[in-house]
Image 1 (cartoon, one colour):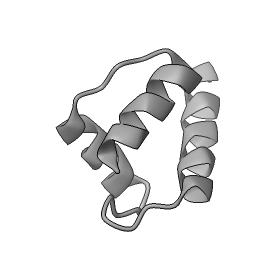
Image 2: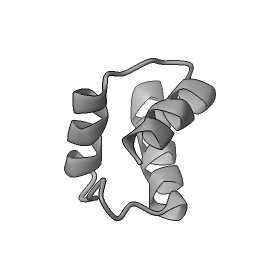
Image 3: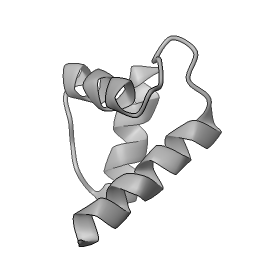
Length: 54
């Protein structure tokens, strides 16, 4: 599942993160990489994009 997070971040934000960093991002977003679903991941990415623009 963490590989999916890496791929999504790369495609959506054009950034590459290591597996431990992806897991930390998921944890900070209140998600668990064992049972992650696509919808919360997309919400997390949208939130990160907004904070990057500020």
